[in-house]
Amino acid sequence: MASPSERTAVAAALAAVDGWPVDAAAAAVVRAGTEPVVHGPAERPFALASVTKLLTALACLVAVEEGTLDLDGAAGPPGCTVRHLLAHAGGYGFDTGPITAPGRRRIYSNTGFEALGDHLADRAAMPAADYVSAAVTGPLGMAATSLTGSVAHAATSTVGDLARFAAELLAPTLVHPATLAEATTVQFPGLDGVLPGYGTQRPNDWGLGLELRGHKSPHWTGAANAPSTFGHFGAAGTFLWVDPTVSTALVVLTDRPFGPWAVAAWPPFADAVRAAATA
Image 1 (cartoon, helix red, strand yellow):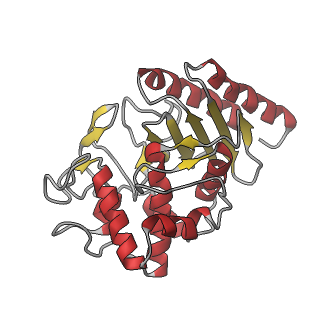
Image 2: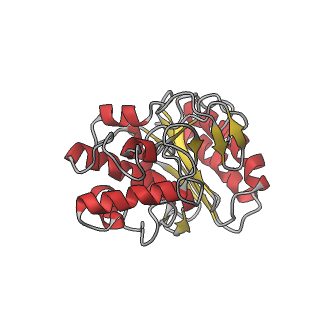
C-alpha cells in the first residue's frame, strides 16, 4: 500500500461505510511501515464498548513484563489466574460473579475483566484506568482516548488514536514480540463458548484478551481473514482486527449499536478492504 494508486483503492473501499445505516462512521486501514488510510472524522470520539478490552489487555501484558502481574498468579476466585481472566476462562458469567470453576468453559465476561482490573489496580497501587494510560495510551500518543470507568467497556477514542494502537499490534514496541505472540496464541485450547451476537462456537478460541478468529462461523471478520486474525468488536458498533498474514489492520468506529446491520455489513466490508489493501 505504498503507491498512490494503492492508497486510492483502499480509500475507495473504506468509503463504503458512508452507505451504512449509521449517523456517523470512521474507518482506517493500517499496514506495517506505512501511514494509515483514514476515512471519516479522524478526531471524532466514539464509545468503544468492548474494544476497550484491547487497551486493557495490552496494559496487562506490559504489567507482566514489568513484573507487576504474573500470568499464572492467583486472581479472582479460587483456582483462577490472570491468564484465566484475560482468556475469558475464569468462570464468571457475562455480567455476574463466578458461575463455574475456572478453565471449564469460555464465558465471555465483563465482570471477569473488571476483576482483572481490580487485581491490576491492587498490584500496581493505582487505578487500573490510570495504569492503562501510563502503560499504553500515553506512550502511544493516544491523547484523544479516555478511560474513566470500567476497563471492560468504558473507553472512548478516535479512529486516529486506534490507528496508532493498531500499528502497535502490528509491530510492538511496548512489549516484546514474543509476549504479543503468546497473547495471540490460543489459551486453554478446546473450550467451547458463546461469542456474543454470533452464538455458540466450537471451539471459541481466545488469546490473552484478544479474540482469535480461528475457524469460527459465523464471525464478524471477513471470510478472507486468516485464522490467525485477532482483535475485538464492541456493542457500540466498533471493531478492530489485525490479520498478521498480510500485516494489515482495520479499525471501524460507528455511533450505532451492534445489531443485524453490523452482522450483514462487516464481513463483506472486511473482505473488500483487505483485498484493496493487499492487491
